[in-house]
Image (cartoon, rainbow, N blue to C red; front, side):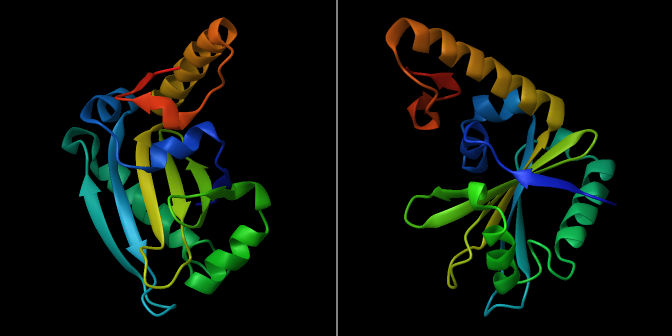
Length: 171
């Protein structure tokens, strides 16, 4: 499988954090994978399911393929050092997280989107991969962008994912 990976957009970042049940259902959120590299070279993960109906055998197989491809030599998930080196090649992936610099990447397949929030700090979870039905996620982002642009024109506000509550812009 050859992956198309790119830095996440500003709007996509908000979809790499815990969401309300309403937002999960609107975006086709399947679940998320949380992982860390232990002392640097290990690979530990935990799966958190959001919607069991969307976690099909096809999705599960595809997720395995995506993760295994990113674990290849020089890949984003090969090791903590590899993650740092990979992120350095994409300065636009960098953003201020809750307490440290994080990096965001998006992988799209025909039916799914995988949003990776990466934190290469030792002693922390090093990545979160939020998995979505691609069309549902893209539709939600497009609607949110249009709604915020309309509010923005009326109130001189901009799109700001921190101003969202339960899937609704509070501009």
